[in-house]
Image (cartoon, rainbow, N blue to C red; front, side, top):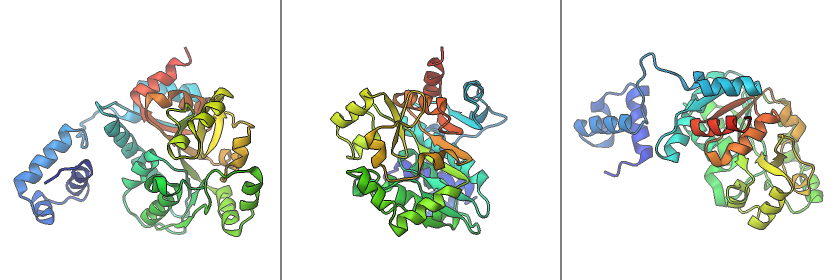
Length: 314
């Protein structure tokens, strides 16, 4: 059997979260009970499962305390780095998923942007039923090139997980001209989503560097490397919900920001809890800038990235 990472996680969830016995799991997957035992051992060895006895929490690390005090954040979770980036990202998103689950209640209204980190976060969220909840896409979509990480798909998955209504942005995130953007914002479906975005309790957002080699908008095909370089040279440090911001965490008054189809920057900053989830030292300056400008109120990241962020203040 090909024991993919997702399969290991699935088996671990059945055993540790669903309280299924090893025999029941063996019957479910048509494998032997010793094979299940070996899979669970592998899960522990790879860090997919951690058994803690009075252990330290990533919510109470010294690095996290420094970030909390420096930037006045509500919550900081700093996850120890693993030997490979995907596992570090996965464990960070697992912590973010648990945190989100603890915030859920009836009538909660959640906004969501797009990206790999958010995909892994909501994918780990346990399914539950709440009353009168809403999930709102915060920005236009990426299109078929990044379907799994697109905001519309993430909003749909999250809404299904918590029995909520979903409000998508039926538009690309970036259009050719400000005039086209203004026209789209008047369309009934998009206008309804924008109105819903004005009364959100929580926003889940990814943070991306604006360095051309690391830009998510370049990878998604919305910007050429040359366009990205020009924006970077103008002082842009990162982007959030499609909007570019400078080293001080201020949304920039540049032409490309006037072509973004998404939540108004002021409405975004009025959301009480804005949870940023981002890993990787290549994103450290973008995260640092976002913290400087108060763009997020809560942060989930990895230890090496957090230390890099702190070093910028020395």
